[in-house]
Length: 364
Image (cartoon, rainbow, N blue to C red; front, side):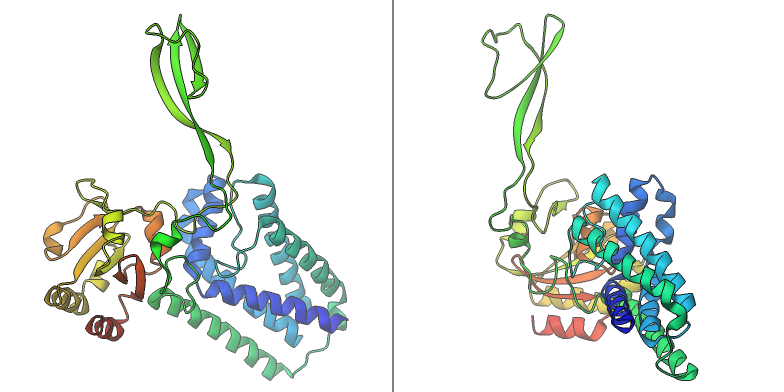
């Protein structure tokens, strides 16, 4: 029984760590959500390092438990981790301030009640391991055990480093290659959207009066002084579209989202949230892509949330603005190229993937 528990706990921790290591920035952004909810925005700059370390720790702890090496120490580590995770999942479930905890990243979305239940079960299993740790014998000798754990550490670190430079191996986001942005902006089948009523605010005889479009006062006339109108939620929807708030606007504020996505033509979008890494992506490959796209009469858009864009730097590009959160979701690497046909994402590549970028454009 104890061996079975070790394998269940170990495999779950390995799976959890690897699936998040596939997208360490995703976990970093989720950590920032928690810090914002707790009014601790000052910790945002440390979330990526924390994400990186947390994923390595989960995988290494999972491997160590299965191998049975240094069981007492790793039982303590597992207990501390699961208590921490249970606190987070309970906060998500009972506070309602955060939609999901991101325990298995975007690839395996779980509801708050599912994640909390999982952690309670894991807590019970880890407590059993904690009190029985002294009876566990290592499967292998010390040298082999340490080697296996080091390999797991190196592999998890390499996986995260690759994802941060070249995009995740498995893209589980709604902006993945093969997805359709317009379809992603629609509600799932059978889902009901939020229902709102237009509420009007008027003033009469120094009194503030509110009513909706179906309940105007019977004596409504010019004596009512208009103050405001707003949408009031009257029924919460059952789901949200996979893609929300996606928009593309010109520098003068014109919304071109529908025009571009419904164009049924090929074009390239380079998503750069900001220009902090411009010296890395505005390189020889970038210049070649811009020139070849112009030769092939393919529109090339630079999509950014940067408030100040030096248009002289991008003379042959059409510059569009988009929300920073949208860009962080769509493009995990700053900057990321999208090869589009209408609203279909035909290819999605990091700026660092030089050879594949040029070959993709050549065959585009």
